[in-house]
Amino acid sequence: MIKFHPSEQQLVEYVAGDLTAAMLMTVGTHVDMCRHCQSHVQDIEEKLAQRLFGDVTDLPARWIANADVMIDEIINAAMPVHRSLSDSDNYLLLEGKRFELPATLARNYHRIGSWHKMLGKMWRAPVDLGSGEVLNFIYMGTGAQVPEHTHRGTEATLVINGVFVDESDEYRDGDFVLLDGQHKHTPQTQQEDCLTLATLDAPLQFTSGISRLLNPFSSLFFK
Image: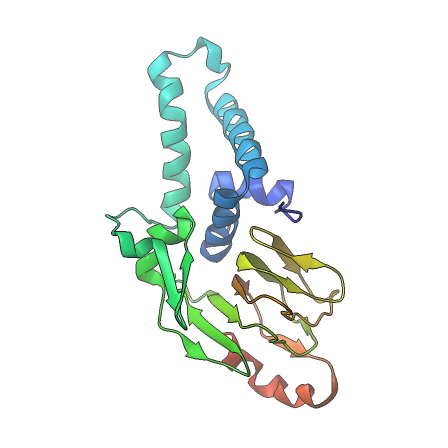
C-alpha cells in the first residue's frame, strides 16, 4: 500500500502542467502507480474543466469527451512524450534484473541513458529532459547505503520497485518522498534491493564523519 503521496498543490500543478519537466515526470509516474492519486487527479481535471467551460453538464457531449484531451495537451506542452512504443520500452535492465516501467516512464524510454556504477552497491542512469534538470534512476543493491546527508535544495524520490528505509520510515513501490534542507537522513536497503527515480535541484550535503569529505564532489554523484 502506498503511504506517501504528492501534495494537493503538486497534483493541481501536475494537471495544469505547471511543474518542472523533472517533477512532471516524477509526479506523473506516481500517479501511474497510485489509484488514490488517479482518482484525485480525475477530480482536479473535472474542476479545471468546469472552471474553463462552466457547468460541464450543459456542454455538448463532444466537448466533455475532449476535456481529457485538453488536459493531456496542457501537460504534454511542457514535456512532449508521444511516440511509438516497442515491448522493450516497458522494461529497464540492470545486473540481470528486469524492472517494469510505469506508463509515463515507458513513453520516455528514449530519454534514459546508460547505467554508471557509483559508490558501493549503487548505480545511476540519467534521464535526459533537455532542460538541464537533474533526474536519475538510482539503483541500490541489497545492503547499500547512501551516507547521511541533508539537501541544499529539494529532492523528490519515487520508489519504482523494492524498498528502502531511513531514520524516519520505510518506503515501498509508489511512495513519493519530498525532502529539503530541514531533513537529514541515511537511505539504505536491507533485505531487498530498490530502484528509485530521483530529482534534485541542488547537490546533496553530506553531514556525517568522513563522508563530509565528499561534499566538494557531491554534484558528481547525482549530475
